[in-house]
Amino acid sequence: MHPSMAIPRFSDRPLDVVGIGNAIVDVLVQSDDAFLDAHSLSKGNMALVDEAQAEALYSISGPGLETSGGSAANTLVGLAQLGGKAGFIGRVKNDQLGSIFSHDIRSVGARFETPPASDGPSTARCLILVTPDAQRTMCTYLGASVQLDPEDLDLSMVRQAKVLYLEGYLWDSPAAKKAFIAAAQVCRDSGGQVALSLSDGFCVDRHRDSFLKLVDSHVDLLFANDSEITSLYKSVSFEAALEEVKGRCKVAALTRSEHGSVVLAGDQRWDIPAYKLGNVVDTTGAGDLYAGGFLHGYTQGTPLETCGQIGSICAGQVITQLGPRSQVSLPELVAKHLN
Image 1 (cartoon, rainbow, N blue to C red):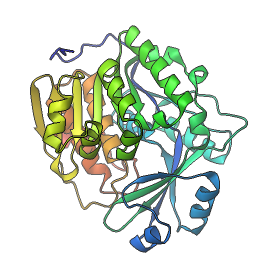
Image 2 (image 1 turned 90 degrees about the horizontal axis):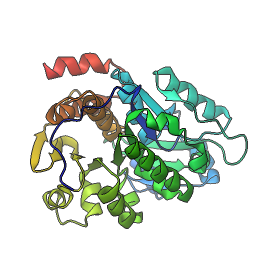
Image 3 (image 1 turned 60 degrees about the horizontal axis):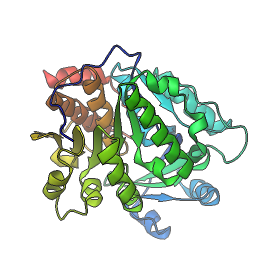
Image 4 (image 1 turned 30 degrees about the vertical axis):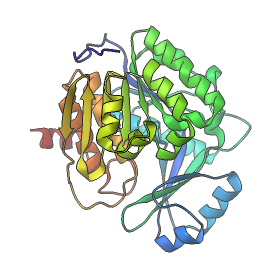
């Protein structure tokens, strides 16, 4: 594939980005290493738990901040906060957490129209344990979110999008995986582009062969952090992974925590600095907000280097607070730091 270097000139579509992902309510709790050790939790990683484990951990954790979450949902909310037109497709149940998720994501202006399930597993939740070093360790019960299947897809919404954004976590569910590929095909056929976030290093390990095929055949924009991209290509270093991914999709936006990010398009490369906007409190949502900022710029036809800077500013802000929803005006923040 030899990607065009031109910034996309999208037709006038009613939605900038539609995301498909796990509809999860995040419960953020301040914790410590002793709690992680006592429950055999690997710091900085995401572990899948069943409903009983989720309830048990929730009951012995401290007070928490509850907010609609899930990787793709966080990205779409960031995009909506920047003024972009966003839609989200994901499955909740008609229970208390399902109501919290639905209200939260609609309150920022994102379209969310997937009907809630009336039976089956409860709404997904993710207990996010934030340690004093700002690392977040996630215990995720996927519940109703993995019940998403192709029949749930509002393909009319997908056809209205400039970009369809998919989260790698969906690959853990065979039904959601089918929905994912069906939507990608519809989006490409209607002239849109497909973006994928690799989501998590362990997720990449579980589905490497599938992800490699997906990147080569369906994906225009790839988002990943340094550990995910090196895992995908089993590379010995980040730079070696950059060589592997080059030219396989139109754009790769690869984040490196305090070292900023690298944006690749064809033979072009931009090294984007990290923006330090305060002390690091909680890294939850940093990659998600980077993607939201980048996609907002991208769907407005902004140069790729500037897209990376917008993403970096949004990520730099969200890590200075608890939770993945910016508590300050992102448009004002971007305007201040880009000028």
